[in-house]
View 1 (cartoon, rainbow, N blue to C red):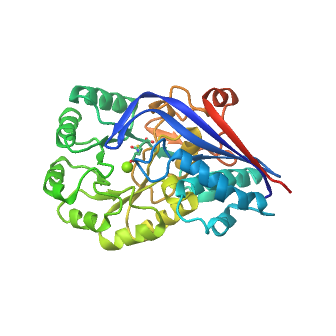
View 2: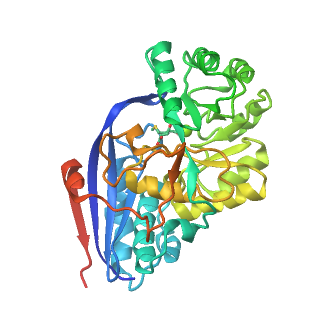
View 3: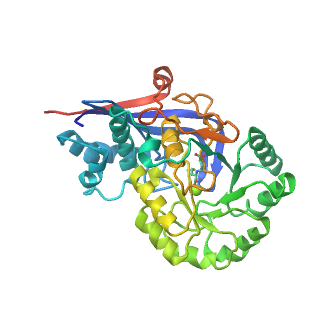
Length: 370
Ligand code: SMG
Ligand code: MG
């Protein structure tokens, strides 16, 4: 494929309700979209970098900057670009995985559309629908939390994840168990809010039959997670710490986790996400697909990934209306607690021009010169 033009589009979507985690509160979802125009089909990508650098060191402006200065120019200069050639082409740029993932997604969409193949088929999906979990933010009160969880269960969500932080952990988990019973698949996510000093406190979560505790400690504290896991019966799942297949292999070898959350954006793209899936499968480690409040574009890619065989736990692949009253694509809808995996060429979804125009805050275009 020859890439003739890349458009970087910032969008901002209002959230149906504020989303609070141990990292802060979000009222809206900003996203950087990448549109590549080629001599064949066009393709769309979405970066999961946020407004600030609280979840990872990357943020929207850093993503846009590295794309403009370092990642897009080699693509516009290359005679022929395929999704498989991106790794070597971009290997000279360290890190910036969210930026690389967005570009890979757009190139992959263009390439797959040109031969009429879906992301699901290309990645190796084994199912056409995936069970849907939902991530529930930190609330101002327990009654508010129980209302929210009750609403999601009534809609059919297959698994509940509670965001926790020091001061909001045992009490909300106990309240949800008491109200909704032991059969609800329940897990918690700390976004690195604890230290090893909290090990004894976190061990009290063992009483509640949780599926897992996600990223309790700092992203770089692999050893700490290995130590903590010896104090808990609840399995530790890593999110922020796993940035590549190599870090997944290391974490597993050290005993730092028994489950892995895979987000394509965090690990540099869908191809690396699949390598992590494979490493985990070979080690008997179940995986599930994380979420970054993606628009319908990123959600389509996540849903395809979540259809791979070792994604044995419900992911944070919720319906579009969990976050947005209007998505930029046709919305993903909860059907019997599942989302349908798109089967059309490429992502199988495209932005709706009217909605896209309404939520766009800026567009920057880079074009091929020769
Ligand atoms: O897309 O449903 C979603 C969000 C799920 O909780 C979610 N994501 O750490 O797993 C996580 C968080 C990160 C988003 S807050 C910055
Ligand atoms: Mg997480």
